[in-house]
Image (cartoon, rainbow, N blue to C red; front, side, top):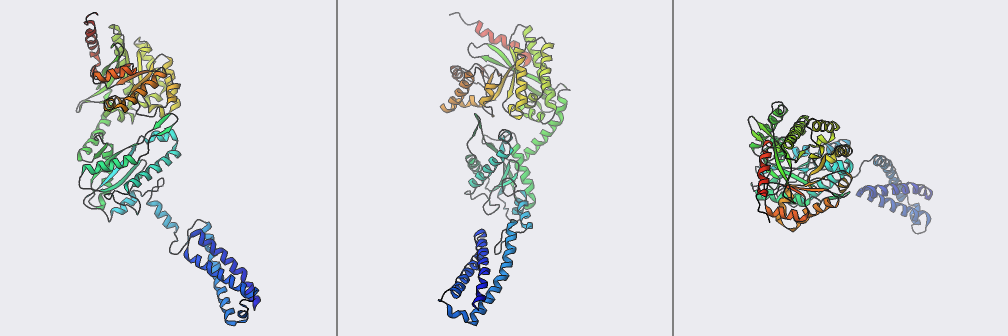
Length: 546
């Protein structure tokens, strides 16, 4: 009978190995118990068959029957274990009470964002069926300028950055008791793209909104250094009206997103939804519809702001500034319609009108013996059109104006959209003598490599940096660094937004070349530049001889 027991040894050994694997791989308690029982059986059979320690049991019918029943039961377990192992090789998890099916996996995917793993809009809907109270609002946050990170780092790396940002924000929101959990450990919801949301229980306290906004801002990583440039991360926040029932959750998302996109945000860069914002959006739609006719109906007007040489206070150029004389809305600033124009093909006809009118005006100044340059702003899309170079060259020849009297201002972001095309066009412009300046320098993603490689005439420091100089040494040092960087690369430095003599003196001491702002003149209608120039020059002509 001992031989019968001996034949069961491989069976128990195989079961021990299989159950041990399952216990370790899937950390299941029951497989661990089976593994220990099989090990005990192996030891007992070994002692009975190969030692004298339990020899008296080798002829005991009850013991042999028990081992036989146990061996039969284990044979059944072996087949079951084999099926489990096949399931495990296909990626299934096993364990007591935890056997996710394909349906469960699909259910999870339906409620979670594929990129970040956060709950999605459907999960928010599911939460809203039971949880909303009369004091809750929905907050939407939108990461700003993330498209440039996509273009610079590539979509794969940018997705990793997005995942890290989402995790940081979600972690930062955890300690805030007023923010609701959508899932057991997640308060942040992914709405798709670079928009996220969370639910805030509030008592209409603006301080509370500011506190949450600051918490999120602190959670964002510091600017990312990449090839001599800094990729900054920022966001905007919009807040809905109260969530009163589950049916309104989509309305609240729309309200919060409307607030995010609203142009009238406060200095903290967040906005609380109001009905006025819907009127604002309707106005935007009307503007877009009217914009295509603005050029044809001659509703556009050109203003101009003088640019002064800081070394001798001479008037050397004027920047063209477009305005729209809307028949119903009055004089509209470019900030309200240029972005709308860029969404459509209207921007090309607007730019052509600005270039044509500006060059004609500059040519007329020269005929009046006012030998100054004209500075023209280009939209990002203009810099991607080789036909634009041909057009401006035609206008120069038509009005008999030398190319070096034209300055073209391009935004930093324009260099990032299609770098190869943008560089090629800048080189063509410089080749015919036109001066190219990077506008709003410091607010985008220009790298040192761009300043070195491109035939740029100079940079224009954004007005926000000039304004902040009065706030402390740190801001002055930042402006000084920009000036030094440009001068070391033999580029001219322009500054905009000057409002007082102190700013002028500081910039002059730093080595800034040119400046413009209210300290010299507000924007004038372009026909009034000649009169202003005579008045400006008169103040120097009337100075007593030293």
